[in-house]
Length: 126
Image: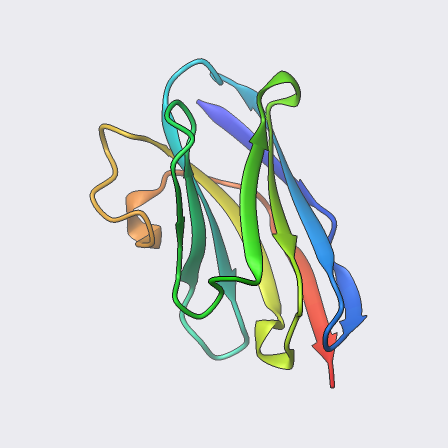
C-alpha cells in the first residue's frame, strides 16, 4: 500500500503559477504510475499529467501541455505538479493517485487507480 498527501493548492490570478506536491509513504519501492487528476464542480475527474516512477517517463493531457510539468524527487518520495500560465478553466480539486505499473491500462482513467490523496483546491480567477 501507499499513502498520498497533497499540498500546495491555493488561489491565484490567471497567468499565475502554483506548485502542487504529493508526498508518498508506505511501499514506495515498487514501480508506479503516479497521475495528477482534477475535478471541477459538475464535471468528471480527468487526468492531466502522469509519471512512471522507475523510467521517469511523463505524459500530459492536451489541455495542459506546455503549461504543467510533472516531476519527482526520489529522495523525498514526493511528486510535483508545476502549473504555469494558469487559466480559470484550471480551477478544480486536484488529486494525486498511484497504482502499480503492472495494473494500469489507461494512465488517465481514474478507475485504474487504487491509491488516492485527499485532494487540494486550485482556484484561478480571471
